[in-house]
Structure formats: structure tokens, C-alpha cells
Image 1 (cartoon, rainbow, N blue to C red):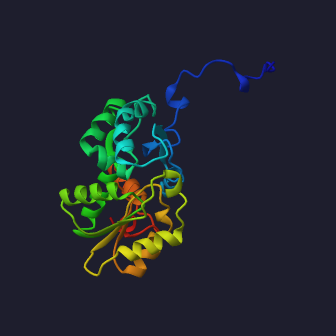
Image 2 (cartoon, helix red, strand yellow; image 1 turned 135 degrees about the vertical axis):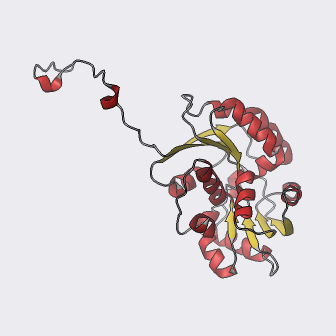
Length: 261
């Protein structure tokens, strides 16, 4: 049982002056929410690493098997609203993102936004593929080479989606992996080799697709080697969400997008 103190310094009277009781909390600048795949193992660490001081990151997960196919990603649309509703139900979330590149292009941005809005109606909705498109536009590039870990059925849809968004995909190549648990294990060296192999002299930028890949570890080095911008999924996602939240901080060491745009 707690001791009872008689000293006035330990008064039990409630503090009814709310101006003295509360401050702005841990994350006064912005609160960002992420709807992840149930199998995701990379994004949380990346977002904590990239997030500026005073910005909070909050995570939830939508159901999916350890299989990244057109069918499994299509089915995930039905769980996005439920997952979104579990993030800060007090309504203080500023931005919410469906944090899957392939899933957002398979489901489509409009459907993703609608489902996220059902679950978190007060937050600005975005998706990972939306962040990528906005990042490429900010860098003023049109002709791109794309590296992915995906199956060919996903690569084909990604090429079409990006071309419909106004880009010229001069090459897209994947590792033909199906399991998300394999994608998270692709080494930094392998990501480097893949990105260099898809690059073309006429490509204005290289895009490394997939939030599961540890691409932020190599993006700065790749830009120096290739002499052109390199966009990767998680870098583009945090950049997009910060800008939607009104956060204009620049971040060094993860490519020119976060440093210059």
C-alpha cells in the first residue's frame, strides 16, 4: 500500500488547471500511421531510422499469407479499413499510408485511399506507390529503370501502372521471389547488383521497388556509382508522408530525394 504523505508537496488534490497538466506530448510535429503486411519485417526499423525528431510513427498490420501474388494482394484490400481503424482512434493521426508497393498498385490508389479513409477518416491517406510517383515527379524524371524482387506477374502490372502514371519504363527486372520472408533476406550486395544490372544509359533514374528490401542501406552509394537519382520504396514513402504532414526537414545519407526535395 502506498504511504500517505502529510507534506503539502505531496498533496492529493487533483490538478484541475489543464494548461499546467498537459504539454504537446512526445510527437507534437506530426503522427504518421502505417498499414503493413502481416509478414512485413523491414519497414518499421526503416521508419524509426528515417523519422525526424518530434514525429511519431505508428504501425498496424493487414492480413496476408507469406505469398506476394496478384491474388493475395487483391484480397488484402478487404482488411485495410479494419487495420487502419486500430491506429490512434482518438483521431490525432495526421497521415496514414498503405505501406506496400506491389499491393497499392495491384489494388489501385483510389481503392486504397477509400479503405484507409473508412478506418482513419481524419488522416490524410496515401500509399507507397503514390509516394514513389510523387518522388519521381519531384525529381523531374520520366524515363526510369525498375528493380524488384517480385514475380513476373507483379512486374508486368507495375510496368503498366507506372506507364499509365506518365513514366517511360525502359527496363523492369525482378528476382522472381514469391515469399515476403525471402524478400526481407535479400542482401545489400544483391540489391546493389540488381539495381546496377537494370540501369540503362538513357534511364534518368533507377527505382528499387518493395518495402521489404533493405534498399535504404545502399541508396546513397548507388547514386554515387550510377551518377543519377535512385528512388527506393521506403525512402519515397517517408518523404511523401512527411511532406503531407507539412514537415519539410531534409535528411542526409539516404539519397538526393530526402536531401534536396
